[in-house]
Every structure is written in structure tokens, then in C-alpha cells.
Length: 213
Image (cartoon, rainbow, N blue to C red):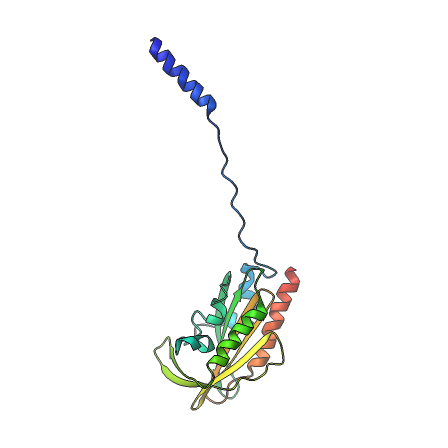
């Protein structure tokens, strides 16, 4: 009986010395601003938001030129590690069928759009004169040649083209604030006025950034 009382008393002493330590609150992740991750779909044009799936370019050889043409996990968008991303496909009929892809990304507040454009430009310049063997999701394989780069008229837009006999793909990368939009347009005869799409894309970025600033 006496021993039992000692054990019980010791247990109460231990209980009285027990401290409850609250777990520290989780640290907030890096800020995604001024455009929020949840707004990424708003970077797509209305046509892309309503479109379906296209026959995306899935591989490009040589590999160091993948950013020039690959639409699945597009390097110019994904190499910058977006906080959120989206994409869409749509067709335009301008006397010929044009296939258009939009790939968009929203990044953390420390995203450097000028550096992203400079890195993409370096890749394009390093692939000048190279033949590009491109495979689509459907398994189609074609060989293209990167064309001399043209100016876009805007420091926020990078434009480039690659062609195959009877086929042309005109492309643009738009980067500003903490967002980037890549546009690819392909058609059997010439391409499409991708710069007009790029200017509209830049307006969408500016509108979202100014609304949430």
C-alpha cells in the first residue's frame, strides 16, 4: 500500500512538470505577385479557354533546341519554375487553317522577365542554322529549319519562326511582371500574325498585374 502511494505521488509530480510546446506556425511560401497563381487561366485568350486539345509538339532534336519548338512542358515556360501553369489550343480560319497553342505561367514575385527573355533568345540564337526534328503527340515526325530571328518591336516580346516545306510555325514569348505566355501558330501556307496575338497577351498580363497591384 505504501509503495503504491509513492508511485502515484511520483506520477503526479511528473505530470506537473510536463510542458506543452505548441508547434511553430508553418512558414508562408514565396509570394506569388502581383498576379496570383489562381489567376493563371485568365492569361489565356478567350479562344484558348474555350478550345480543346491540339497535336502538340512533344520532342525536339537536338535537345538543346527544345525550347524553340516543344509545346509539352515548354522549356521557355517551365525552366523558370512557374508557381502555376495552364494551356489551351484553338484554330483560326483565315482562308487557311491555322493551329494555335497558348502556354502560360505565373511565377513568384522575384521572377525576372527580362532574364527569362534573354535566356530564350540565347537558345534561339544558338540553334540558328540547325535542322529541328520534331515529333508530335500523335507520332508525326517532321524536319524544320529555324529562320533568322526578327524583331518584335517590344522589349517584352520575343519572336521567332521555323519552317518545313509547305509549313510554317511562327512563335512568340511574352514576359512581364510575374507572368509569361508562349504562343505557337502553325499553318500550311505562311504562319499567322503572331505578333498581334503577343500584343494582346501582353495586355492581359498588364491588366491582371494592375488590377491586383
